Image 1 (cartoon, rainbow, N blue to C red):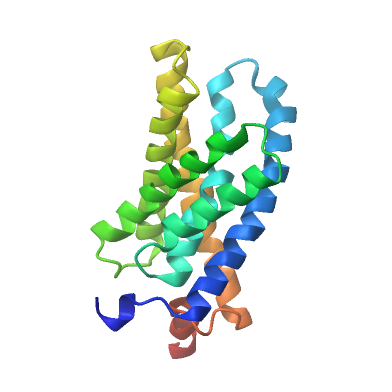
Image 2 (image 1 turned 90 degrees about the vertical axis):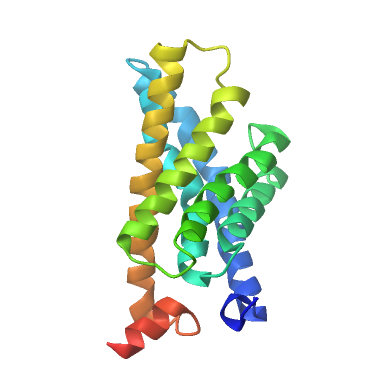
Length: 194
């Protein structure tokens, strides 16, 4: 493994901070999900448009840390924190977080961990949506009708992943870079070059 792929102590610390912060956000987002259920009664799969918030740390961790395993680590640790805080879905969110993190990880790996622009972020968000939808397809939604629920649910999860996690993560990184908090990472160094 070359040096650009080796994790530094600061990489571990920042990935952990992102993960813990999002674990708390997940815990709060579980409540948002619950209270918005009635608003989507007209077409329940549409609620997955909110899903991307649960996918955000996978994309954000990858965009900031820029090393193999960052997406998987941040999403998995966020899921563990969420479970420890008392997720409504129990410990099942832990393997779910691993599967979701794997989606973004695969996207960055396909790009050889070299592209961090908006298209890469959108791909990572969409791939995280794909793996999330696959997990839910079999674990949470197996009893629902295929074409009336599971397929639209899956497609909207991918859209939410691309927009909320992909675009949202990219916008968040671009907003943080000028503050200087990312100066020890790729996004901060890119800002310094401009």
